[in-house]
Image (cartoon, rainbow, N blue to C red; front, side):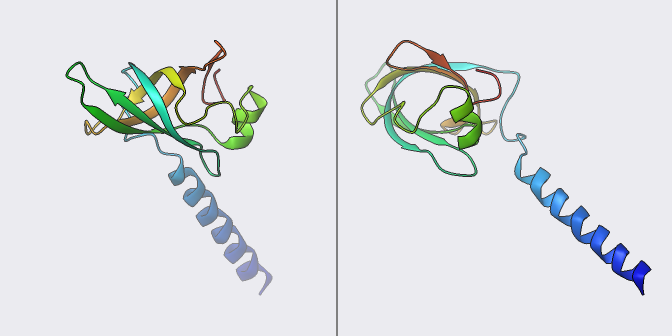
Length: 126
């Protein structure tokens, strides 16, 4: 009976771990490319599990497109100099990201030059 219980516990832990690692896939991003854009902050979602930046990018024809940028976990970002108030709607920034592989307007944050002049990353590599 104890062996079955231990096996069931081990299986539950393995399933939980595989779900956690599956969440952190970066397969949708082209990690070999960096794209830098001049943008205006539309919204910052400083919530778990990842901080999201909604930015507005205007192309050379004057057309504005909204991009969704995934960043690090809030706790990781706080430890690396971020605050929920670091970026506010309307702030102008220079943002570098790994773009989405499918060409949609979005990416994974590499770094952003914030209005006070600092350059901040997603948390793990500022």
